[in-house]
Image (tube, rainbow, N blue to C red; front, top):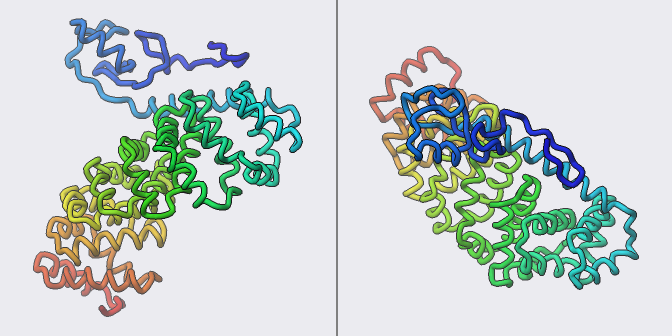
Length: 414
């Protein structure tokens, strides 16, 4: 049991490393089935030991594999604990704050008097009503003050609270163009602070908040370029869409990537960061990925496969091609449209043989024929017809199509 600011937290025993007894940051399992924190077991093995520390069983192999399931459980538990701590701090600051108090609090904040406590009061005030959020957003100099805090402070706990206030009033700011100029003119210091929250933030809500702020200010080509060229930003976003992360964080990261991935340069960088492999994992993740995540993953995949390099990597990943085909008619009309657009691009527009092979292996012909009979959009129907034309002229597929035609009498003409 751990005591933290009068909050007693019981740590599940299986979250602790058997060696260090600390909560594991990167759990890995040995061939004996026992899980350790990566740093601890590496130190044990590097010292020349060839046994499992917990069982003292001689190891047939010193290889270990990440325990993804346990890592997700620890992440969920850790976020829950952090939320409880935040709520207690907010509760402690929840003495009634009136609009008359705001001017005093702002002056005290600018004088650098106990900024964290006063930020908590702003959070409580904003949470009370939409009117309060709008009052803060329109309060003279308040938004500028928050931006200044992003520039001038490196403490992650404080930055997370600044982000929390920002997100509460974001919809009330109104002029996102002015906000963009305010944030991006700070020599990238604001972006550095938001990136730090993404990398080191202790709560998923603050990470999502940072992404919402970034997405709100990427209004034009210039702002998208500035954000995407921030060192480490694109790579961090690719890491955040990993299936190991919270679904809410994955969805927010995908939304941000879609918002900024308009230029060829950004798409090329994403391809180099192996975004297609991560998207394939999302598409094959079963029930772990929501409908919205699948739709966004397909949308981003459609964007990166608009480049030659993206199409080449996609077509070389047979599992990814099959995963896209498997989403047709199974998720939503939006997901189906993105999936068909991807397949149409690589199979019909650019005539990639590997992609066509993968399409047939995933029962693509049948699905496309069924799709043409469905209540799909005219665009999807046209692309489906184009795909069938490809199969008609390819002897490899013509026998499959002829066989299907003999069993089906009501297929729409193409």
